[in-house]
Length: 230
Picture 1 (cartoon, rainbow, N blue to C red):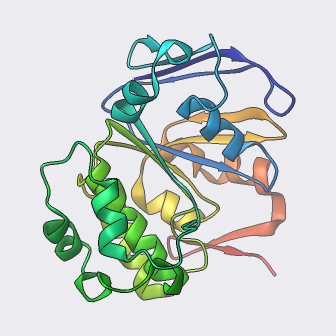
Picture 2 (picture 1 turned 180 degrees about the vertical axis):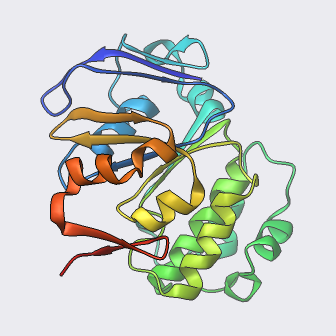
């Protein structure tokens, strides 16, 4: 599905990894490590001969071809039209799906937001709206960038349930939330200062020895949950 072969730029260094079509991925790393830069690379916003997407070199794909293969969901909904409603935004997002906008709104349980201006959404409402747009886009691969950042527990659970299920095809999730990463169980790629420090199975990443090598004494595990060791 994805192959990155020895890619280097001013932030990322000699990145090499591959992901098959039956795998989902979680990208972890500290602030400034290069996670969002990697997302731009995978979306074709940084054209490169070193990246293949579904066996096609990403720098050879047209914008329409890329839109069928990959979709990027940002951490924040950026809307410049102050009058556009959630329903109007979702109508524009509907590309390759068999879902109607009404079905998608119901699935995400946000029917009550459909006439609300996007500019007036809370951060949690924005995230649910963007998940709905990803469902309606229906690319073969979707990258979710920090989908649970700044959410209350109820909205976090809604986002987690969506990501855990197969409402969209293959998923790549960028997050700082180790509990979300652990509970989802997807393959892990950990970046530090632009380099891959770990790429492998979820279980191997969350082994105590590996966590200690990455986080030292700043992290502790309590009853299958990870906490900052204050």
